Length: 388
Image 1 (tube, rainbow, N blue to C red):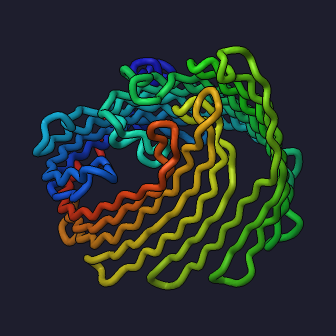
Image 2: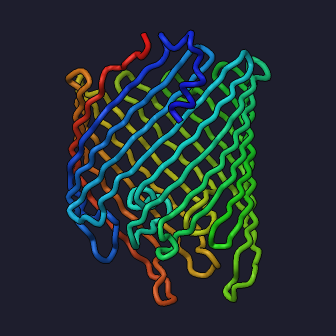
Image 3: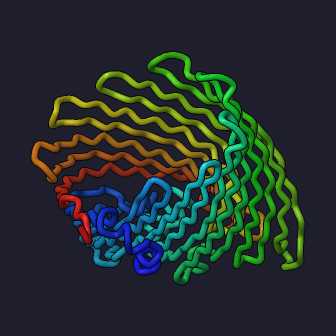
């Protein structure tokens, strides 16, 4: 993909605009329950080596950025060892009133890192592969009004996923958004979304949602936004006898945000309800609440504290037993950047999951907790301007 992006660059502009930014980091630490297993907590000593590189080309009207990363994860239990790959390509072209973009990504990673916050299914460590292609178009109708149209196709595949209740799926997503600025401080917007979900569990769903909202700068330090809307979905899936069955669902959705910006710190808070695809074989209704606080302690030290909670409501393929999840995640990170291109992070992370675990036809409440401490050393090379 990097070759494709580079070939799109006119030869006359390569000398000044093509760059490369590589970086590397190594982390070591201990997680008392890496898999978040409620029955047999598995304390793990871990080592993670990450290599990343960003290559790109930018001008006033064109942009092409390619990112590649490899995460080599090693644990005291070798069954958790994995090498994860992440690739993405972002292309952008601007005109006076229009902006056209194309985003493509590929990920190959362990379900230990990809499924905890999604489905909570970790009865076995498996490889998840997914790729996404997403074109977009933004058009400025006037100085105050613009409209955006996005499409995304996502394909997700699990290695031996069905043995652990995970099903391959594909998603088509279309979103249209209209934004209008009433004045310098206030803007209003509306969105309409359509999702087509097709799972290997023989389940297909069509979901439509609309949302209207407002954004307002209340003061020099505080900006807020709020929106509310409704969604409706139809799902075809096999019933208990294996025959076809159709079900419908509707409800309200919302999103809200607030950002406080001070001289040396920033505090953000967000809340949202959305309908998302999942590897369980159905759409899920997700409520999310999150907050982040960053503060510059000195010129060399920063503190970052973030936390989130998510509630997922969904049915497994074929209906029947509920598999709802509640997931909490909080992290405190102390960052040092006293030397050029070097950085050191010390972090503590707490996770908790509450879920309904079906067993022998019955639903039993269960929880799992984890505390982890990690120390990370980072190095970023100076930006390399190629062909200059």
